[in-house]
Length: 222
Ligand SMILES: Nc1nc2c(ncn2[C@@H]2O[C@H](COP(=O)(O)OP(=O)(O)OP(=O)(O)O)[C@@H](O)[C@H]2O)c(=O)[nH]1
Ligand SMILES: Nc1ccn([C@@H]2O[C@H](COP(=O)(O)OP(=O)(O)O)[C@@H](O)[C@H]2O)c(=O)n1
Ligand SMILES: [Mg+2]
Image (cartoon, rainbow, N blue to C red; front, side):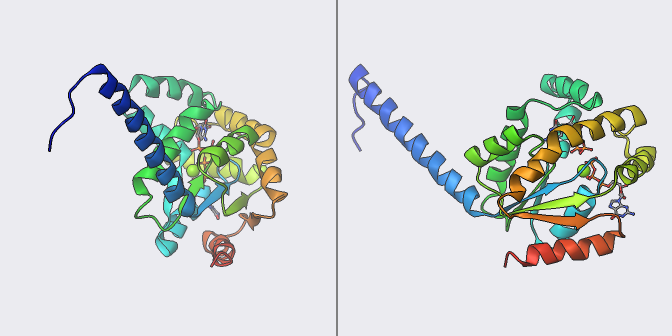
């Protein structure tokens, strides 16, 4: 094969075609992970999202992406970004929108060809994040709304705090997380309700009874 001379003109042409190839690959990868269904899992702190997601993974083989876990992994890595995130999370506040969305997107791309579906646990936290998710990734097929009373959530988190090692499982931060949940996150559920994709799950029952409701909701997708 004869390679072109490395003069400026060809360089420009090369840059242009490289850009076109990148755009094409990006559009392909958007199609790939857009065509695998994603299920949103929402509910207050300690409502039982993680517990139910674990059971869904076991039964349906979906990939569980917890935005909180992705952030905690970054903190655990000890990176500069992790240190910054830790300070925000310890206060029970929300980390910037793009940080979480990029992490979720990267994790989805990494699993797109082997995954049967994605459980997006704990994201979006605000309506604006939901809009961004749809622009960059696509609309969720279903939103599981894991509903528990605030007293129940506090009780479960205080109990979990005895062993979880999570810096935010203390009463002061739990209260802030709950306040933020009612202020910023509940409106996300209303946003998706208007499209008829929300399935409300009563999480005041035993784990297995809650899972029966979750399974019924997922089975309607088949
Ligand atoms: N009784 C009862 N306890 C539950 C149920 N689901 C979860 N728990 C307990 O409640 C605590 C919180 O559950 P998680 O699944 O970690 O809750 P989460 O919604 O992922 O919480 P965050 O990550 O803080 O948002 C855990 O200690 C669970 O063992 C349930 O259906 N019934
Ligand atoms: N999408 C997300 C998820 C978590 N977080 C941060 O990470 C913390 C823990 O998230 P989590 O989903 O594990 O737990 P909860 O806040 O739902 O109890 C939150 O309190 C936020 O500080 C965030 O800012 N944005
Ligand atoms: Mg969780």
